[in-house]
Image (spheres, rainbow, N blue to C red):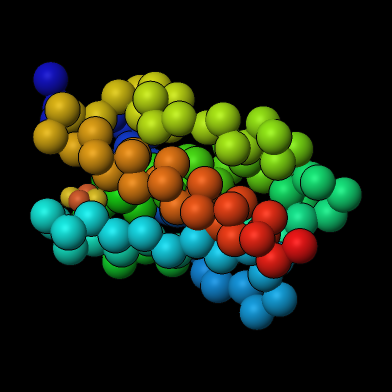
Length: 123
Ligand code: FES
């Protein structure tokens, strides 16, 4: 069996929502000290809905695929729903990640939550 699912490879090769956002309403940046990977998520919020989302990830392929999938999953969603996003849901949507790469999806969950928190704190 291949180490990475076709979905992971697809999102790694062609990540969605890559980039930064100058007028973001919330920005979350997190890192993993063990592997050194960094993930930054930008949110545009309109009427408590995530109208746009971008990410920049300096990290491994699984981190890039997780960011791409996580941003896709929260785009157009109400904030309350987006803050419930779990790393398990991201990993499942990617058709699984190898056990030693699950922390990459945790980074995506943390980055999304940090960006939402940043938005609430700026209100
Ligand atoms: Fe650390 Fe992927 S190896 S985020």
